[in-house]
Image 1 (cartoon, rainbow, N blue to C red):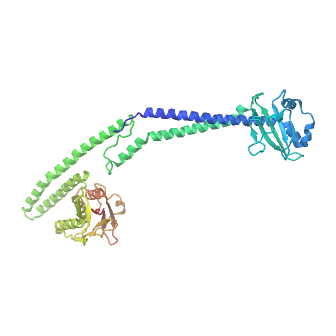
Image 2: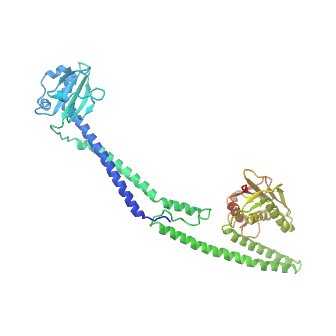
Image 3: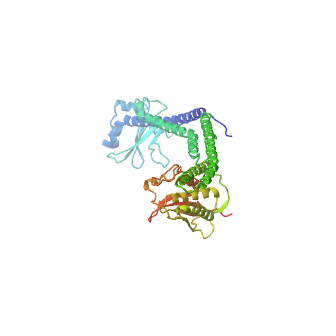
Length: 456
């Protein structure tokens, strides 16, 4: 038996695990995001600090640096008072100008000996943050590389919090969405045993297990499944008692009715006796249907016996032809030149065929024949058709004709309306199908399709 577990404890553990994973991933993503924001803002600040130099280069070329810089710009690029440095390379990569002390750290090249687009180390390995820009000048393209020595001073950027707000909110929003999706997925995973139990419940009585399984259920859900199984047990007990009582009553009534019918035969053939005999026959038919319904309502014991369904159909046709001969109905058995073997419950299949033939006789005009057709086997199955010469089945009744207690509106036949329901239940239990259609020449045709027996 599977070991029980607590749904609440499992949910708590999963939430804790998801929270820790989200915290770790969120921390890494947030750290990288803030670092990228700080670096972008620092890069923008470095270029802004050198804006006077870049403007002169773009306007006058290298000779524009011959004029003294403003006091603030000069202070920033003075090694004694500032931390900024720059170097200027011409189109051939030759250094044409540089700030005092920049030769130690600049220029900075990448792996292919091109000026690095941005960097965070100096040429000597020092902690230097820098960026490279290509400027258009009267002297042609100039590579302007500016950097800041972060070991000498640290500039607090007031714009970082505002600039980092949107990326941080994006990271937090994305993390919240991922956490929500994880929680939804976790909830669906935790509720999977309930969905499995629901599917099992749908199959009860339709070929599935008779009870819901407790395997893999949490300790919170297991009592519900036990309660449902207990209710099903009580319902089965009540239904079994009811079926047994109905079958016993029907069985006990058969003998008195048979004796009563025999006694009526001794009274003669006057009109009153004929009416009494007809009433007794109707009552006997009701009892017979009640007994068949009680037997069929139980799960049919599917046997492995192999029998000839063609002979079974012929026998059913002959028996009913003898019983109904007084009404002028002839039961014609067509086809079945050779045996057709199927496996299952021969008595139940015979009962289904008799019900279909009786239904066809009841809906056929007096004196009209009923045909029992045994078609040649095709694709591993055999089809048996029962055709009458009646008015056929109305289109609105096609979908409900096999329901229990269904009665057509154009017949005065006595009974409980269980014959077609019994036939369908027997056929489905044998893995077959049953259908009805109307003939173009008139009348209804009920077709049973049953799988052939597998070769030994």
